[in-house]
Amino acid sequence: MLTPEQTMIVKATVPLLETGGEALTSHFYTIMLRDYAEVRPLFNQAHQAHGTQPRALANAVLQYARHIDAPDALGNLPAQIIQKHVALQIMPEHYPIVGTCLLRAIREVLGDEIATEAVIAAWGEAYWQLAHILIGAEAAEYERLAAAPGGWRGARSFRVADKVVESAEITSFHLEPVDGGAVVAYQPGQYLGLKLVIGGQEVRRNYSLSRAANGRNLRISIKREAGGVASNHLHDDVHAGAMLDVFPPAGEFVLRPGTAPLALISGGVGITPTLAMAEAALAQGDRDVIFIHYARNGDVHAFGRTIDAWASDHPRFAAHVVYEQGGREARLSGRPTVDHLREWVPAEADAYFLGPKPFMVFMNRALAQIGVPSGRRHFEFFGPAEALR
Image (cartoon, rainbow, N blue to C red; front, side):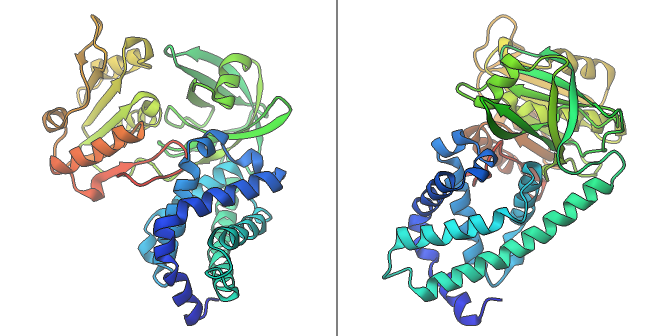
């Protein structure tokens, strides 16, 4: 347990983390991915190259240090971490590796004058205080998923029953359990973990479930990313009949119960979890659903027929689709505007939005501008969580 003196030491490092946290976490990942091959499958190298993973960790470490004596102030950050870890099947044996590399990075980046033995001891105690909380919470979640009807623990073999091209960039994979058993009733908005072997190397990735749970099978819809190791492998090399190792659904960006109008706002492949949310809400039938989607053009617009069918069949469903590049097939053209939201989204709505980071930054500000309070604005990042700023 942290002593009062150690708590003060950790809080005293906050200014250093504010200015140099990203350098520290970048060095941390360099050490860990270089020296510990067993954890490499857990990390997306694109997130390292783009800096999103070090930036996200730097923010998490900073928030933890700021609130080391008041962990409730961390909000849903621990829940986000736990769900990401569960989706990737992080195990207790991974935590000593992370702790060792974190303390090495603190020593090597800050230097001996700042990273004294007292500082290292304080941060070591702080790390393990959090690690024990996460290990316990993750163990409980693994047990819950294993005990749930249709649930499982670790990897379960699924067969690709169908592979459907949804647009020029997005392809859906329909998955059925090889054992013929039931499939856990996941929450709309959650994602699935895959364990792949590509070029002889293990790779783990998370992909959003793009339809509501039915107890029998799963669907993930994946965008081909330029240079994406896993997405290109799935698009090019995985076909109907292939077997995939699948981890249980996870994620805390989920549709919450309510009867207020539901605004589902997506950009690009951000449409995938909002499809599951819309389908679940329409099945409930107790709220208006406003489905807003922005795509570059008609070629990359996925699930257009599904959305049109919902609009035709459900009087409480309204769809607004905007193409950035216009064209004859465009319903509306242009980029997102505050006027769009003011016209389509009532201030009392529950709003869920997902897309590229600039899109989400804009949506968060625009929704606030039209009067949707922060407690009704929900979002998630594909990949490491970042601040919307």
